[in-house]
Image (tube, rainbow, N blue to C red; front, side, top):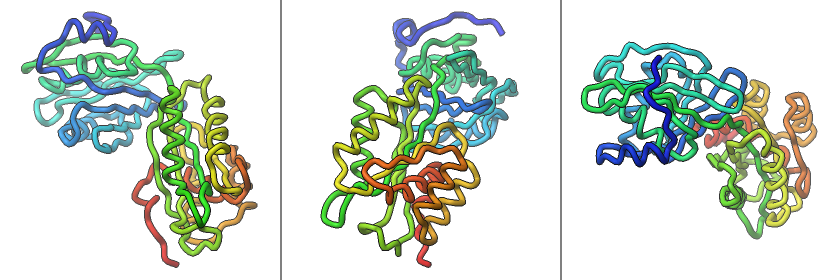
Length: 314
């Protein structure tokens, strides 16, 4: 593989200011062993679905993928698998994923417009350290580039019981926690509402808990958790508030089973604490213990949005 040029985002913007280039908003890569989760914010919304279709069907290194608006989430395995590119049918994809020390290197390839996206458009996004430009692309030509980003880790924080029967809302308070942390420089990725057992006598009303997802550098994980606790202690209205913390990209089977059980029937604090202890998940009382039950359940379904919102009547 011959590298034409190594360019930083600011260099790309100066060199390629053509009207046919649309910069990506952001590129984020989180690592857990030999698994890499790539999160991209595409310049288009529904238009980006074409790219998602191509990547999912043409890249052997992609094990899972979904689109939420203009946000693409790809779960990839480390390795190298060249793509036999063919116009329309196999027009774009990921050919290589590797982790080197504190960096992630992903090689994107595409024909014509997809090639422009592979190189220049992605390379101009926030979060990109540099690209190794292999082929410029455009017109009917091949475009190929390695996009290098910081190696980050995923932290998912479950939150429950921040309101009372008279005031408050856990979903909004949790989101505001995420937004405050975003202003402080943390990468706030998502907010997921998880429906719990509707007949729970401890509920305030709708009986939901929240999962917040973040991408962080390894050295910032403890700071993130500490700040979540500080903000909740300051703002919560409840004496039952608790959080649970899941680190990494994998959801243990036992955690998902616990979450399903908490959606479909009553669950107690003792069981929540045992499951968390067995799985080495931090379960932290902020102002009380009751919130531990829902906070832990939120972690088990944060990546399954359809199941998360289901209501089980009995």
